[in-house]
Length: 539
Image (cartoon, rainbow, N blue to C red; front, side, top):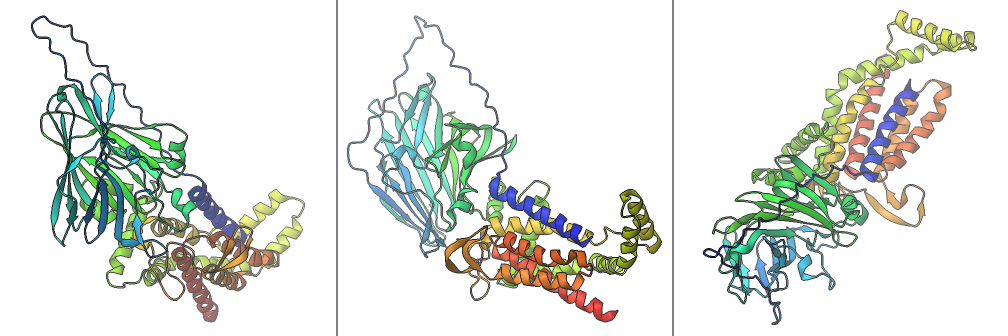
């Protein structure tokens, strides 16, 4: 039975690993209803008036760079297109200690590929791109003191007199920006909608670039639910619809988010598109209505669940808590960790407390399980006799064994239950430790500097199968603890091989897991050893 238990747990771990490592949840693209072409109105001798054409003349003068400095970020904008060219977060650092840069950089980045570029969709079906136009800025530099807010205006006037004004309000203490587009003058009547987006995608910020890219996705949320399309899915298409009638759309990485919400209405449609091999951009259209400015909320910052939820825009849905059936438990584990962290400001200690509490909660089941396993061990001599007696008749052997279990009041599956019931907690913790930014670069002790990644202490000059060239301590300690636990519980000589085999398998399996997750399971194994020792002493 111990062999079956371990194989069942191993199978669960393998499913979890393969699913999270190789596959990404894919939501079927929402079909966008085709918009009817503008109705053709027969010309009238008395009321006919031609619309003023909209023409954009690219800016000839050299673009200026505008700087916004706040205590939590530094943003750079260009007057060519009025776009964001850089957005650095001061409180979130890369592995080399520099502020995280969210906008992809490089000479090959075109202006129309940058965030907050605006395009106008005419009623004739034509798309007018404003990314090459020269905007005039109201101010060249903004420096924000704590608690302060200031606005920047970028204005474009076409040869026909159409005025496009982009207004961005920056706050010193928030990653949420207020963004508006106002259009007035000749030619406005020919405009059907305004297109705005985060065209560049987001920059990879983590040392494990491959793992970071697995979390890249285009997102959208509306009345029809939440849509998530992975980088891999979007790359298969030149353009992918994200749905219609949407409250917000955006792009995410493992730990960061850039999203646009329509404050005065909804995005009529939104789409995602690949930007090279390592980025995915999004854009949405808002119907032009009335004479007032079209307002947006722009969020550029960390995937901080509590902060996003407090904004009331639904952006917290971008935080990935795993499969639908596990999300409530993941959120419960996450809330518990945040609560304990207010008192114990070390997430490593928080994980130890969580592992100990889980062990305590499952103590009655574990106690019953261990008793069942010990009774099964005492029953081994009689089971061996039955195996010898019915070695040529498997059906009679099974009936005889079940009858013996009933006589002794033993449940042969009793040893599996506690481990199986702990699996949802383990999966929930995996989601929390792997995807919530609170654990990013959260250290524990000594060599464990980041609980969200493996605890690598050194690199070998060569690579080993399955584990690479990294030398990690926690998985090895966990494997040793598991071996001791196996030796204490295994009495059947036929299972001796499993005593050595299973710890090796689990060590390799856990080797690339977040160190916080390995710490959780290591403490669980140590507490189980103590429990088994106390039971043996009491007999």
